[in-house]
Length: 114
Image 1 (cartoon, rainbow, N blue to C red):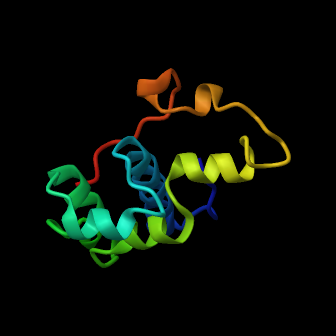
Image 2: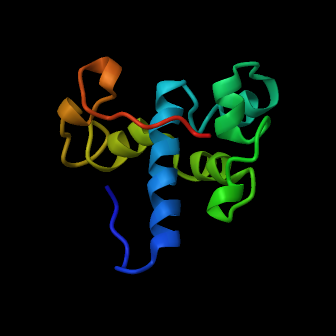
């Protein structure tokens, strides 16, 4: 989990939910490459919630409804970030192991974006 300065609870909530959104994006197949198409075409209510086309999940965080869409568009989902920075496409070439999604044998799980 990411770290923030002590006492900055609002920023901590934002950072925590962005990480959750990136994990959930991987679980639902939303990638940096397909995020625009998924936002425009997906009928899946979970994908619509993540990408801000059905509900304004950012309001409680003090953000707009496109907050998760912009994060995914900028850096990709959790798996893409892992792969690029410490995984197979990096100099470290670390396996996902416990950092894989819960439904792929790892421990990564995010509460639903709501």
